[in-house]
Length: 365
Image (cartoon, rainbow, N blue to C red):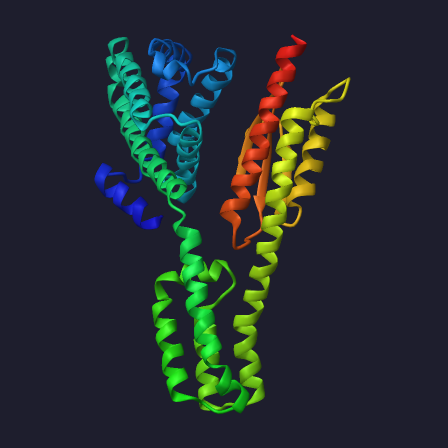
C-alpha cells in the first residue's frame, strides 16, 4: 500500500497541504447542503444509477457523503485515508455499482463544486484543490474496486495456500527417513531446500496460515548441522503445529458454513431476528450477537455496536436500520488462515438480517 500511496502522491503532486485542505473545507462549508441536494437530484435523473439510491435513505446518504468529503480534506494522506476510501469502493462493489457510474458521480460532484466559483471567484483555488482530491479518491476507488472484483472472481488465495502447503508437506514427508535415522539424507535435504525456494512467492499467505519460512529454514539448517532430538523437535513443531491448526480451522470452517446455511434459512423464512411481538433495538442487538456467536464465535475477536459510523477500523462495519433507528455493527476477526471466507460468511448473515429488519419496518408502517 505504501508504494501505491507514493505513486499517487507523485501523479497528483500531493505535498504538505493538509492546512490548505482544511481551509478549503471551511470555504465550501456554506454551500455543501446545496451541492448535495443538487448532486442527488442529478443522480436520480439517471435510471441506471437511481436504482442504487433508496429514496428513504437520501438524507442518510447525504450525511455520509459530507462525512466522506470532510475526511478527504482533514485527514493526512496516508494509509488510514487510503483505507477509508478503499472501504467506500468495497461497499460500491458489493452493491454491484458499475465503476463507470461511480466515475459519473465524481464528475457530477466536481462540476457542482466548481460551479460555486461563479458565485465567488475567490473560491476558485480552494475548489481546484478539493477537485484534485476527489480525483485522487476516484483513482483509489477504481483500483480497489477492481481488486475486489479480481478477488471475488478468482479463488487464487485458496489455490495458493493449497499449492504451498502441498509443496511444503510433501517435502517434509520425504525427509521422514532422515528424521527416523537421525541422520541427514543429502538428497532429501536438497529437495527440502529446493521446496523452500519454491515457496518464496507464497511466503505471505503461509505466514498468515502460521508457517514461518525463515524459522523452518533455520531449524532445517540446525538439524542438518547437528541431527539430534532437540533440533528435530524444533523443526517438527514449526511445520506440524501450523498443519494441525489448519486442519482444525478447516473443520471449524466447514461446520460454520453448514451453520451459516441453517441460519440464513432461519433468518429469511422463520424470521428469527424479528419474530418477537414487541421488537426494540436492544432485543435486535442481543439476537444478532447470539446468531454470530453461535456460528462464528471461534473466529470473532471483537463485536461492537455504535449509533454512528465507527471511527476506528474494523474488518466489517455494517449499517443496520429498524424503523427510524440507524445503528452500526462492527466486527474484527482473529487472524485465521481462512479469514477471507469467514468475513464473507459473516457479511452474508448481516445482509440477511438487514433485509429482514427492513421488511419488518415496512410491515409495521
